[in-house]
Length: 201
Length: 169
View 1 (cartoon, rainbow over the protein chains, first blue to last red):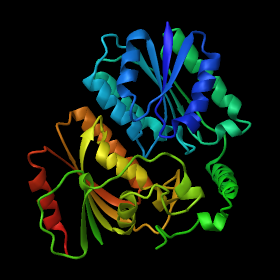
View 2 (cartoon, chains in turn brown, yellow; view 1 turned 135 degrees about the vertical axis):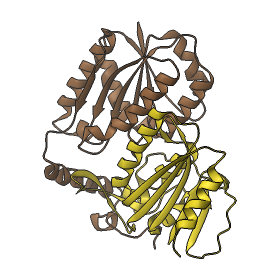
View 3 (cartoon, rainbow over the protein chains, first blue to last red; view 1 turned 90 degrees about the vertical axis):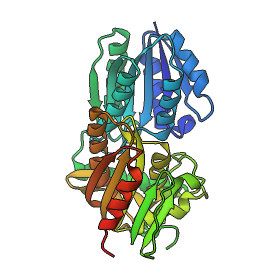
């Protein structure tokens, strides 16, 4: 048994999804293989499906849905179905504290699986996923990733969820500080980030 | 202003200057790369200077909008989804509590009456997922109200004409 990990983040090489995938690999008891989905490697990745019992899709919520990177890959996979169909699991994260904001995207993956005869496996939905790995709450995410890994290797597929254990008001304050620090790295102030102008108008 | 954003060319005549019609399929719009530049480097402006930068200001300004999109796996298909992902410069990085949930703060974005014409051969399940998607969009995209119309590709033209005819100028 081996798990094929596919990162469908639009910024795959520098993504949080890559960090989540790395934690999964670290704790997974079976061999894993990791690949970023890019615009040009869809067919190559489709060919990998022949050799794996399980696929883990790792991606962020994008505009309330699956990112277009994953949507386009699914369309290629649909046209080039592998003979071997691994079980598809999902590790999804969103920047909001409510992990359930990921639910619609998960339903899209399930629909793809149903329409194309792939079994759906486990899912881990992460809220506050943009920053949780940079906080003391990282351990909560790591623990759930371990459980996700165990469920896949034991083929006892299940659903897991995790987010920062903060009130919404506390989360808003924490996320504001997080984004201000990212702006400051580019010499952009909070006031500049708060501009109401769009394309300078 | 009123905006019609379509993922394919529509044969409609629009004489009213208050209506902007954009055929996304005729534009060059690449994928969002998730760099957060529009939030933390050049706030309000995407760092990718392609045609998307001409579209999202209209999305922001419109108080009445009509999205016309093919649907795949319960999601807007590639053309519309690519544009919606590229529209995040109209939001701030900062989070607020809105309708009891955390969402991004909007920049100068007008509240919208949205109509979404979703076309294709959609299963019942796919329609349910798409409805949930638009419901989530309503929180994140400043929809004051919305209406979803499912139609076939063959009837699309007529469906769009009927909806635009309802708009009071």
